[in-house]
Length: 144
Image 1 (tube, helix red, strand yellow):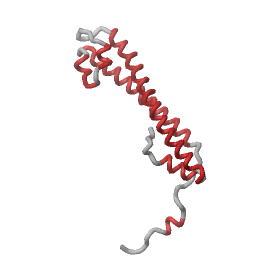
Image 2: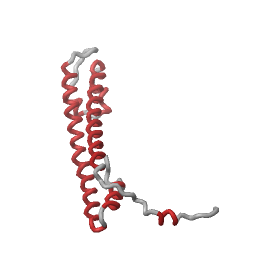
Image 3: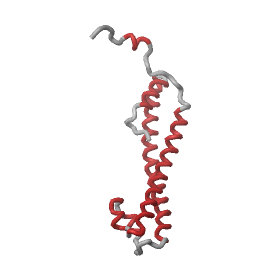
Image 4: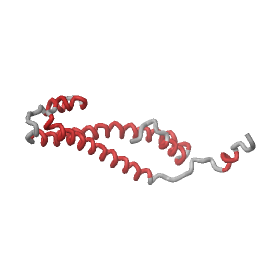
């Protein structure tokens, strides 16, 4: 995901747009990057929580291999570092698989959004950012 410190889209806007439209184009790029980051952080969180709750609900209904029971609500409120202390050993593997499945879904969302960004960038005009022969002739020549 692009961040507002990524200069490549800003350079592209400055290269492609006429000088009068550069401020508007730059503002739009920064706005869309910030908006996209704000919206899709919450989308990723929602995807993670929904998948995790669904998978853990199925795990809580299964009989444990080593016996015991665990509090699903306490597990959802716990820090990920406390998972092993909150879950009986018989449930640990399925719980870890549920966390793995949830984070994998978040990566899938991220990959899909990156792919959409790539597709939309292909619609942009292709121009070189080099100044041409003048920039090359300015390079120093001779022995050092």
